[in-house]
Image (cartoon, rainbow, N blue to C red):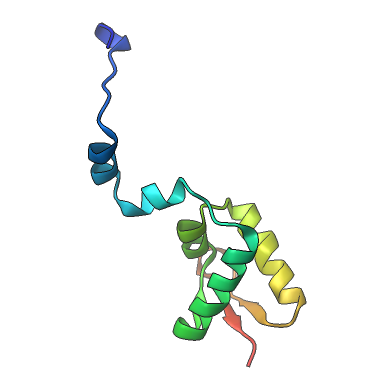
Length: 94
């Protein structure tokens, strides 16, 4: 469509999904907060630790939304923060 700088292209949905990858397609359908909360706790039981970026990747939430959700879980006494910045992660309380 268009000419010059205004030119744009459109792909069929299946081709666009293949180019973007599964993670991007999943992010288009964000999970509800309670579902993400349960997923966080189950992943922590499996792996032991989880970062804000990893939670954002599977939930589709923003950084602040994840932070608030994790703070709520921490207030319940189920998890705690370790580290700061990019090296920060959450762990289950033992």
